[in-house]
Length: 270
Image (cartoon, rainbow, N blue to C red; front, side, top):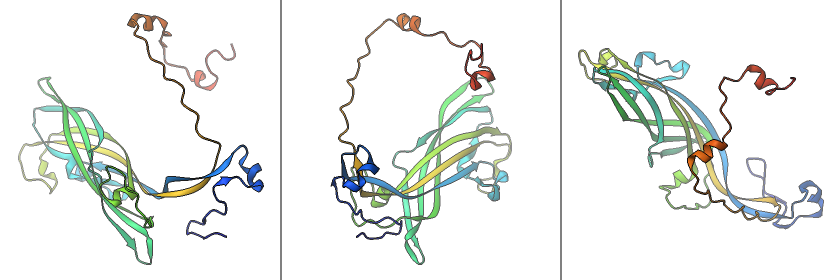
């Protein structure tokens, strides 16, 4: 009746069209079964990284990793680094380096990939001046897995895709700068740097969450409740004097909310 797959599900017993009588109560008001083509996440994993620019802080057992990109020479007139933030992935920087099958299971793979994050920061100098929007590129290469990532029978190409690997492997990143400072010490404290005397270094700490997904296009049979209704018409915002909008706003809360406001809501019990 159906072909079993490694996930435990097989090909649907029911073909698209009218819902069989034995399923009507189960699917409620659905009007038919339809076949849709959608991306399905076959497997995924979360990689947490805490990257530091000071090699002496590295502690692999605690997940703290030294990255030389996060430590570099800076003018000693710099007094502080402020407003450091991750602006996001550099466009086009994500690349899948390899998908290697593990011995004995060709569907489970080790995924190696590379990407770059763009970090912006401001530097405050000892004379009070500020240099804004300085750029730092953080380049990373990682290997994760094994992930269940079967080879597709057919590849559906989309505009803008670089390779088949980028169609199958997807990367989501949430990252932020945890700390940034000027270290007034010799940059030669880490072997990755040339020796200097009386040199100041910029040191960053960045926390990164990586989600790697193996995503393939599949066709699924699902119940349908009809076509989506047309959207509501858009309302054009009229041009109004800014004071009119201001005068219609509620006044702001002038004091921080009390704990009771979160538990019972304002005014409850009075």
